[in-house]
Amino acid sequence: MKYTLFFFLCLLSSGAFAENFTQLCQAAGKALKANDPALALAHYSRAHELAENQSQKFRILPIQITLYQRLKKTAELEKFLEKERQDDRYNDTQLRYLLNWNARIHIWPRRDMRYALELLNMARMLPVVKTNNIYFETFFLLGEIYYRNKQYDYVIYYLSPLPEIKNFHPSNSYKISMMVGRAYRAKGDRKKALQWFEKALASGKKVPYKYNYSEAERYIKELSK
Image (cartoon, rainbow, N blue to C red; front, side):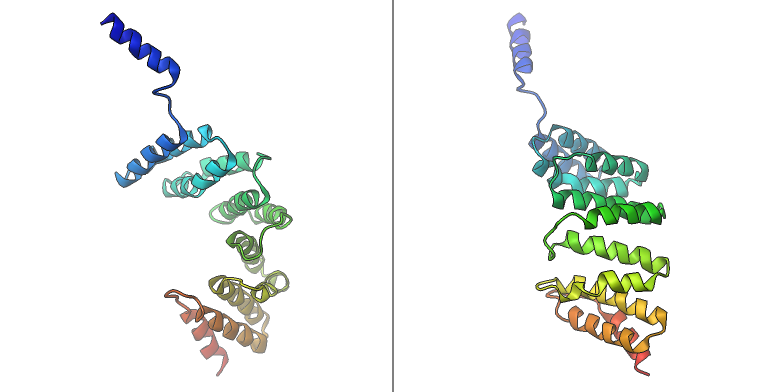
């Protein structure tokens, strides 16, 4: 008995039973399969603490964010994102992702547009490959804020160049073109609004998977009368 206890203590002190990033991610995955998001988030949070580098952290960030949202822990998510974006070990792309998400929760459900705009302008200054969804997300959220504030000229100014980017994903081009079209429509410029809705429709038809572009068709029908 004494030898068994001694052996167990030696194993424990050597780290044989210590948690590590991979084990915790596996445990989180099992918790998700068991439909226990709270336990999954606890495991992922611990894995995040034990991550050896920012790449490991960034790998599980989207899942952590989704779980915070699923559990309606908006305040905790806000604190988490604020803390993470202060970490200068993240690269520009990763930091821009964090800023985008931080802004997103201030638009919905916080409705703090001023702070969200501040975060997005910070994100806009960080260089990211223009065909990256993170690049698109920054400008799409900017457009949301300006459109909600009825600042339609800003929507047009920031968003209209994006569909011209080479290899810009057609689904992103569709969303951007729709927002620009709605901005022109709100300004009363039916001709330009129609042009942008037609551009949106053309982009929607290029999406390589089943995609709903009926809204563009509806606006085109309305403005073609």
